[in-house]
Image (cartoon, rainbow, N blue to C red):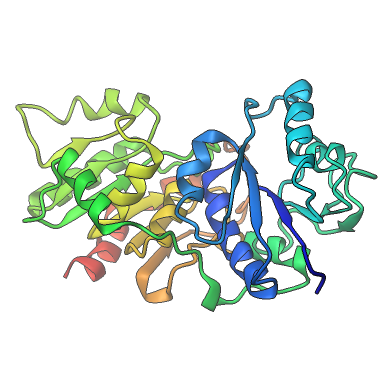
Length: 337
């Protein structure tokens, strides 16, 4: 091990991938306990990174998702260069994500060769995209393998959790179930909204308190047809929370039911009991990384799965349509007894 080493990590852009990457940061910290680890990420991801004790400092990548933003990357690279990093780990695969470490003159730039990254990455690894789990994809960059002792664990503050619960009037006298019908990646990862609503109505019959979480306001159009007459047993918090608040709410839950999404990984990392519903994606690639007794996975694994597409290429969407309300309720009953 060299002395005076300093690491920079280019963080993933998706919340779920970012949470998974904490396991990589934990292993890196074990290998190099005295080496500071700084991270480049978009500002909206800072609340998640602030839950990770492995991270020292953060740089704001003020570039829209999917945009090159070369001038902004150049300015950030000049700022990064002042800190004399010895090694950069580029966790994402795009050309643009490898620009800043190269412009900053970081001597060792570790990552997958990816798209047109010859030279930008000078310690290159090769791996097909879905050849192994996302966690092991990150671990390979430090010649290691994921193990359960280093599961992601976001450190929530109990005092702050109480404040958030009070803000959103979380009713502690009932079992609180959080439903997460969103998945930013695309429609093929979303269990149909009408099934989510039917599920909430079933929980209402059992006197459970149900909250909807997410960002996509289109869900509220369907929910508003159900949440009538000041009925407070089903509450939509869609687009009413920030990322930090969501983490605290999920940490307060009795059960989380979610698509394979960023919120699934957040719930897993705050020790929530959860049911994860998979459609076009695979639980082998991005499983919840909580203890086995803390989660259940519903995945049909039909002949065209996983396709990893944003929209069902065959038009039938059977990977999700064949998952029934009763199947979800039966799995939920294990946690709600």
